[in-house]
Length: 484
Image (cartoon, rainbow, N blue to C red):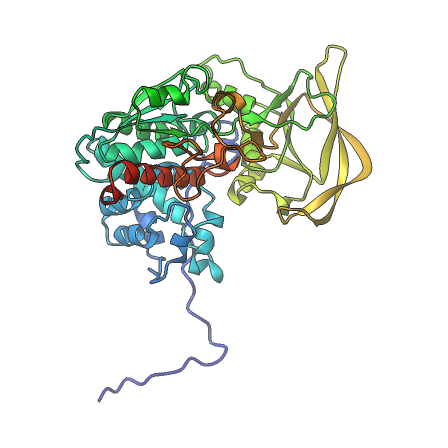
């Protein structure tokens, strides 16, 4: 009989300390505010192993249910814990076409990490950081390994699929189908591929080389990319079907900016966030002086809005040399829809907040150049349709001196392709209606996904829509056995 006695901890005895979440190295705030290099530096192998060891390997993983593409999160972290990085990559690639992207820009705090059991009484596992580490450190031998983690992919099939747009939803469709041997052609309106991943998200948050790496792998697998093809103008949906494409996927996003329709929006110095970020990102103004791109370099900048696009715009303005950057938001800091990490990074870098304030008009000089914005104080009333407390005007106004205003209050669908394709059924808000399970539109064989269906949303939700559509396409054209 054993001499070891079981003891019951006395009441009040200190509990075993929880292992803290592993911090990710990042540039110091005042250093990064003056450059466009990536803010967060990523885990080393040692840091990744330490963080992976915190995972409880739950039998019923709530984290997976919180992921829009249902990554086997315990599976890939389990592989990482066992020292099998390549196996972890394989698990990720079973459902996620862009893990290096998602590890950087997905709102994990309200999705997978928001559902993590450890987060109930402490800090959740840093799932996004581990995903980024695995994707960045995996060394692919060829395009197939890059897209799937496997050395070989399916043999070519006599099937052709066209994607209009090259953002996250279309890239997901192209990556999924090309790995199964489907011939995919992607038509992009701009001169560079990647959609919002390239023109919308700043270099310091998502390096362009990360996106290009994924696109190059798809090209190596046979995906054909055609730039300067505008859906609804250069190419029509019906023309693609007439040319023998077996299916068409529409992933053109919703890139038409919204304005407030208040006086002064036509003044010199007032820009939409779409135009501002596109000039900097697509025109490579962030790489000055290597690229001498004409760009707005305001000294006193106001950014209107509280989402991720507002944070991106404000932090970009700082890096372009602004002396003062103020985010104007009609609710409080707690109601801001931006990722907590992005907001905190902005504040650390010196961005100011002007909360409970809403623009009434922009004021200009005799040359119609912006000199200030008149703001009205707000108070919070009852919750609105979104569940947040609705801002109400108080009548109190004041002027904020500025020379640049960036409007980041959302987007709406660009009508070019929609007007050229009247057979599509649209919602009351003007977005394409699809079957929620398959992504198929009112036109047989034509699918859609991403912001053109949902309105402005996250990269991972667009990828989820692309994956559902791709699975539906392969199921319809090849059969259930081919679906992965």
